[in-house]
Image (tube, rainbow, N blue to C red; front, side):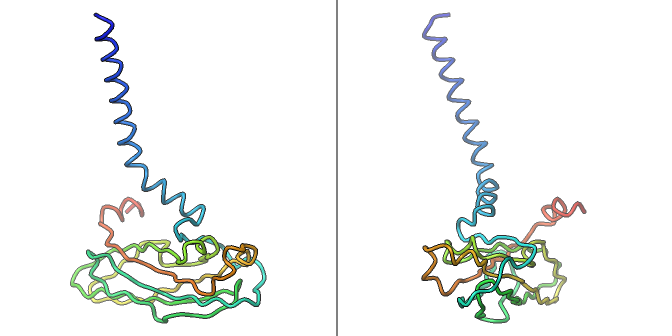
Length: 186
């Protein structure tokens, strides 16, 4: 074989390797980005906590609540309160209501974020319906609690001194039965 043919084969092999690598990264990008956001709070992703950390401060923060459903999700979903005012470090409790108006069983899962995004690192949830999938039978309604707090470490972040209000937003998606079986092992 000539040198040109060998060089062309090597180049084709490298290009094929790059293409395969890029396709692999494309499939892995969503779970990796999700993990990155959960660990860092980037993009308004909240933190998960076992209990309130630290002492409540004198600073008041208003927490607004928003509820949405994906276009494929037929549920009615809304917060039971528009907002709550609490001290930084104080534990809050909010309720969301979901109703399945259809004649079939639907499994849903909720994603969440906080705005402004830079406050997501300091918004911690102790308990949330978004940690597990929710199953609603035909016509069933359910009230779901969220136990949360704003971490007192927010006081040390000068970039957040002007933040007096945050919005906790949820979006419910239909979870396929096969996806639910994979998650729950059923």
